[in-house]
Length: 219
Image (tube, rainbow, N blue to C red; front, side):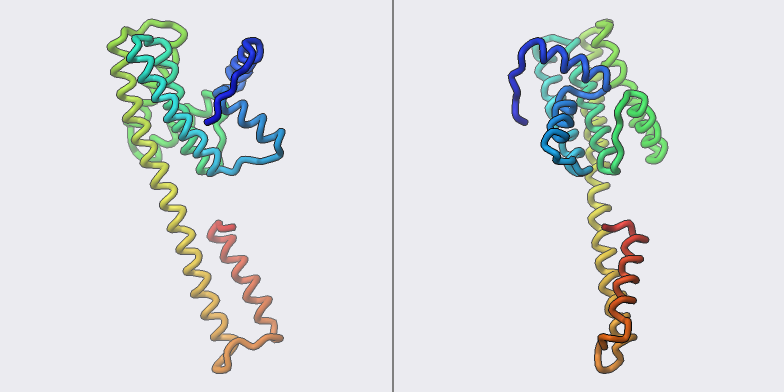
C-alpha cells in the first residue's frame, strides 16, 4: 500500500474524522479517492483492502509487542480483528460502518456457524480496543490476547476462502445449467434439422436464460 506523508494538521484531522466514522484512516482515504476519481469499489476489491489492512495491523501489533508498547499493540490487534470481519462482510456486499454493526455481524456469524470461539475471540479483541484508552491490561495479558486474535483471523480467513470457493462453484453450476438448458431448448425447437430461426425460439431461449440467471443470482 502506498504511504502518504501528510502535514501534522491534516493527519490529526484525518484521525479525528476516521474515529467519528468508525473506520480506519486508510479506509477513509481510499473512500475519498474512490469518489474523487469516480472509481467505485466493488465488493471483491473492498474485501481485499480489508484483508491487507488486517495483515498490516497484525504485523504492526507484533512489532509493538517486541518493543514492549502494549497500548499500541492492543489497538493494532483490535484493528487487525475488525478488518478481517469487514473483509468477510464485504464479500457479501455488506459494509460495516460502526462498532455496533461489527458486533452485530460477529454475533450473527457466530450463531450461523455454531462456533462460540468466534464471539469469544471477538470479545478479546474488544477488550484490547478498550485497553488502548484505559491502559489497564498487563503485558502478559496483551500478549496472550494477541495470540487469540491470530487464531480469530485464521478462523475468519478460512471462512472467507470457503465463501470464495462456494461462489466459484455456484457460477460453475450456473454455467452448466445454462448449457444443459440451451441444449435441451435447441433440440426441442429444432428437431432433427437443428434450431430453426424465425419461429420465436431465439426470443424464448434468451428470456428463459435470463430468468434462470436471475433465479441463480448470477449477473
